[in-house]
Amino acid sequence: MDLCHRLRDAAKPYWDASVNHRFVDQLLAGDIADEVFGRYLVQDFRFCDTFVRLLGAAVCAADDPEARLTHARQLSVLAGGEYRYFIDSFEALNIPESQWKNPTLSEPTQAFIALMEKACDSQDYALMLVVLVVAEWLYLEWAQRAGNTLPPRPEHRDWIVLHNEPDFVRWVGFLCNELNRVGAERDFETLREPFVEACQIEQRFFDMAFDGMR
Image (cartoon, helix red, strand yellow):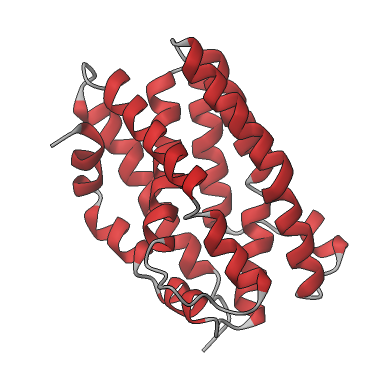
């Protein structure tokens, strides 16, 4: 078993709870409440700036020229199509600019931002990859639960497609291969701890979307 799968197994309760969360079930079915999805997107959007920092830090920390280019190319995806998706979805969900630009950050949002900042400040490429792998691989797994029939509303459908299209599959494969490569000689516990923490936060983040709902 490779390192990434060992890490995923170590976080299995939290990983599985996230991939099979009721938020995902409702999103894939296209019947998620606008209030729930809007709350989730507003908080998720707050990750973007720190995620840009994390990708930039990975460009600097990567020990291979091709890896640096791959991280750099992903920055253009985040700054392009994904950013546009958020703006279009806020408009579709009637979320005013004042709400999505300056929201009160939820606890899991603050926790994941702090974890990304810790990875950035560490200048430790393996730690950066741990956080990136959880953030991207976990989303690929839930998005791959989608069947052939996607929900009709663009804000639902496009969020799923963003996380299971071929380019995203290749990106996740690259991240996992990189972590397997650079983490092979690392003490497992030093990678397991942040991996599990990131998975725990992801589960709490999905829970947060239902705050105040019955």
